[in-house]
Image (tube, protein in one colour):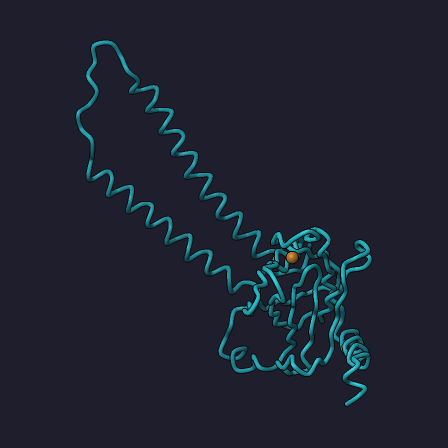
Length: 236
Ligand SMILES: [Cu+2]
C-alpha cells in the first residue's frame, strides 16, 4: 500500500528486527551444531571439569546488552518517521484536530465524532453505528480525511475488543472503562477492511468495519450530513 506512512515504518521496523533475530539464531545454531560434532563423546576421553568461563560469559552478556540497546534505539528512531511523533507544535495544538471515539461492543462498532476542533464526545456531534448482522456489506464505516492527523480513542462497552486494520498495521485494544489513544494520518484516499482482533464472544468473527479515507472536502460535507442526521441535533 503506497503512501501509507505507518505501514511503511512498521514494515521497516519488522524487517530490521527479523534480520537481527535471524542472525542471532544462525550464530547460535551454528555454534550448537559445531559443539555437538566437535565435542561429542569419545572412548577413553574424560569430559571437561570446567563448568564456567567467566570472561566468556560476561562477554556474551555484554554483547547481548549492546544488541538490545541498539534494537531499542533504532526501533525508537522509526517512531518519528511517520511524521506523527509529538513535537512542541503538535503538543500545543493537540486540542485541535479531529478526534474519533471508537467503542467496541458485542458485536460491532460505534464511531463517535467530536465536533470540529473539539474533544467532547458527550454532545453526540455525529455517530456511526451498525450491528454487523448481515455480512460485510452491513458493517460501519469510519470515515477520515486524508492528510489530517486524527486522534483515535478506543474503548469498550462490555468486554475487551481490539480495533484492527490489518493492511495499514493499525491495531489498538479496546478496554471497558479505559481509553487507549493512537494518532493516525493517511496520505491517500482508499478503503480498508478492519476486524476485531480480540476474541470477544460468539459473533467476534463478524465484527468488521471499514476505514475509509476521503479528501478533506468530502469529509467536511460527510461529517455535516452525519451531524444533521443526529436525532439530538434536530431537537436542540
Ligand atoms: Cu470484539
